[in-house]
Image (cartoon, rainbow, N blue to C red):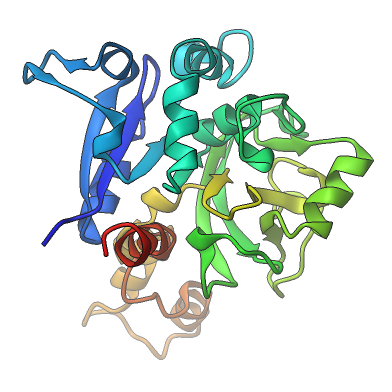
Length: 291
């Protein structure tokens, strides 16, 4: 059986490539972490073999602080791609292959114009400093408006971690209206009732219209600020340890304080909720590119 091959592209400052590859492998893909310089040269020095993006079905640009976030987050990474890999990436898109950019990867895709426009060109949205003026690391609720993104098929509510200082989606009024009119907004930050919100900390960056993720017109390219790869197991959940402790035999589950904590934790899903996003991308490849 041919497994979908995922290219996890890194550069100096990328720091989420290992868990991204792990999460894809966990759902049945075959992932490889490759430095952008190897892609440019067409050669992997670590195993001394020739290399081509044509051999892969999914491109993943993971999170981190590429290029040290000099100039601005994702800028050096995006310009490296624009200057050296533009034709290669454009062919990847033309061949109908999915792309996902997570956190710093979203910033890269936005600066290239791949989200929301589906091609490398002018940038029409920005991800800038959080309204709180600080690095935000917390868990958020997400709701999904109507969209055609292959990565979010049959998904609505979601709970994922964010970790960024420049996750604030900004665009002019006309562009924001276009994003919603064309169903390009994939996820919005939500309150406990599942409604999009501008309130802090539910919307940790202060993103306009609570935008947390955007796709392109084909639905195959996804830029997402929260980290699906960081919720690949139930124990990744921020309340998993609390629930585990509360379930120990020496704990009095009838104690009101314990009851409050159990209610806070709720029932955890059987698997990390972030895996479904990645699984949708892998399933798309199996159904459309490997048959």
